[in-house]
Length: 225
Image (tube, rainbow, N blue to C red; front, side):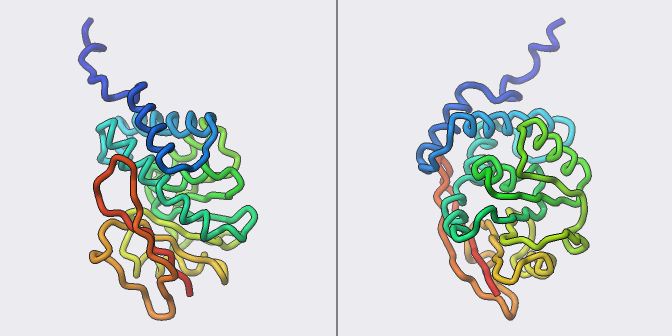
């Protein structure tokens, strides 16, 4: 009879979590529409709903889902947008996307970008496909597979990853998918942990990233041939 009341309220993102998300977006000055705000919040709700069964992420806390996932992914948007400013409708690949981070967040925030997300875990790819449908995203697609074996029809202008692998391995596995003038975007924590690039590649830019309400080191590596 009381089983419904035993579930912690933190299982569902609420109005206070939406306020936190909206305040974080405002701090980042991204100029997102109300619809995009709502899509991002709905996406967070989908992660939480599916996470109970699919184990998409180790984060269960509401506040951390907003700060460590949604805002963390949004915080790199200004630098990535600047890197892609000369391209109309750039093609993005998110490697080891997991629950769709940062790829689906980027797709929501930039409807003119074409975002492909790939993960080796079938249930995570299934979640991303469901999220794309639920959010009505026309500019995103999810693929189940290994990046080293992926053979799309077109190459990508930017290949990104968040907590996927070492930079060296990330480039080794995905370089066959990058366009001639494309670049890798590696989202990392502390710089000193992983900052080596393979021969033939260079760090084009290294940006410290400030995530609202998150007092942890974040850096974005942009890497070119």
